[in-house]
Length: 612
Image (cartoon, rainbow, N blue to C red; front, top):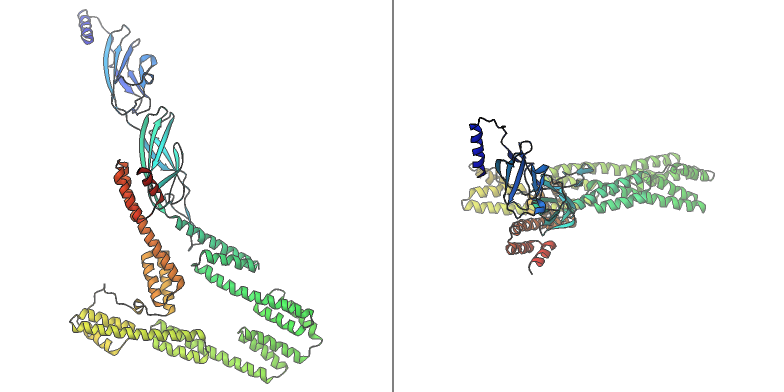
């Protein structure tokens, strides 16, 4: 009706040839994208001077307190309570009250998005045992059993008062929550599902959000790193104390370092050397104390002997000066024979410490002063011993080279020649061990040779050739060489065929086992756990070791534990999806299934709380 009236006035005006003012078409504009719970402002543009707007809004169920007019009626504002569309109309009047336009506008509120981010997360620092320095991990690497701070942020921003309600999956604990900031922890590695809902000051829901926080670093790795760092720091301090001649405290700290990191080769080798030197220092100190007591009793010769021995075992800055003082005390009652005896005693001390060259020099000076058949005979025996030691070292070195080349029989012959020149219990034990290895290799070689013959009899020449060559790997015989050469003329083994070596049959020396353990340690340091375990087992089959056995058991236990945790986490992830979708019963069944694989107290508490 109003439009018809306006049209009639316009036609009448044209008839009278009366000019009316021309206005731009009004329109309704918003102050930005409307969001639930946030004030939305609508304004009408291009209202002529003196004009006004009459606003109406549907549905009319909005709280009147949330609807208001501003700017003399040119603007209206309200707060949407949900995402349902809101119809807004505005009738535009000129200053005379005539209707200029009737505008319609639909407001489509949207919920705020919520961004969840890790807040102020201190990067994890691990100890690099190779470089001997701290290694800062990527800040995105998060650690189990460690507080992780998260922050929620509305997108776009919301300036008015608002608060957040947080929840998490059953395996994740919320340790503290302060509106937009929370702290979470997770006992095991895996993914933490975090959910948050925002409300304004009147309780209107502004929006929801979720995030998956990946926790990849087990606490055990961090604790092991700390122990290795502490071990190295203790070892460094021990070296400083040792250089400062505080030997007892140095050994105490070094002992603690080896307990913290028993597999650190540098620390353990250094500790062995420090312990040996400390024993020498202790022995020398005891000798000096005895010398002091002997001096007080007038036993000058015995005191001088102990001082000299102590200086050889562990030289000190004032050691020679104290020896000179002791010598001066007995000079008045010593004759040339006594001086020769002193040189003999000094030589005997060198001799006792196996410092033969120094002993010979002392003995030679003694004999030059006072000839002595006994001392001359001793010198001749030392020279002969030195020759034998030199020959023994030569034969032993050649034996080691031959053993490395796999020529075990020739190595035995050289080791035997070394024993003739210089009896050595360690070398004798190694010879016995090598003899046992040779016998076992010969026996296993014969077994493989017979297997090859059986395969050849059945017409399986490929397997027969493989057995003959494996037999040759263990011990070479003419028959195995002949049969392998005959078959090898017509049969070629593929490049993927792996021939077994003596170690694969558990045959080898303790040194072989040590080398395999070293290779396994290297694989372990490169995080190649499965390959390392295989080598540790091979070393154990050759030469069982309690330390390697304990370490191997721990590794296999860790691998099994990690596999159980990963399997349980996969099931928990499926359960989390069911839980988010409102399927609580199905989720609980999956949570129970995960407990069969790996126990988690938080999952148990969740099931208990939601099964009533």
